[in-house]
Length: 155
Image 1 (tube, rainbow, N blue to C red):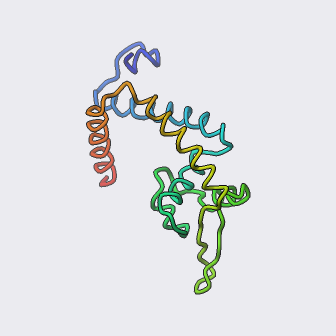
Image 2: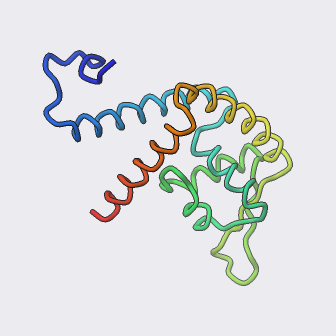
């Protein structure tokens, strides 16, 4: 269904570029809503999961700046997100001796178990939701979105 029909517009969107941008925004909002529901089942937010998976993949303690650089989503409020993860005993933060301002962050054993459980179901859910696209279509979509992001970064 076209975006114009989906949002019950009386006329078509002016330009194809504008329509494409609105499609990206609408799709991202829909994915966010699905993600919120998925991660809530595990008492996590998407931002919390992103941090846990970054720590799992890195396999070593990282400082907050390094974690922020690797996040797919916004780095805003990383300190607050880390505090919530620490309260849930999923991560551990430790000050380094040479620079007491720097906190190193690592997964706890409980954090490893949680991320392992969530990751398996997450990958399965992604595969199920994206099954309407072929592998080739996914590659094309990824290339197009990467091209758009690069242009947007340049301003």
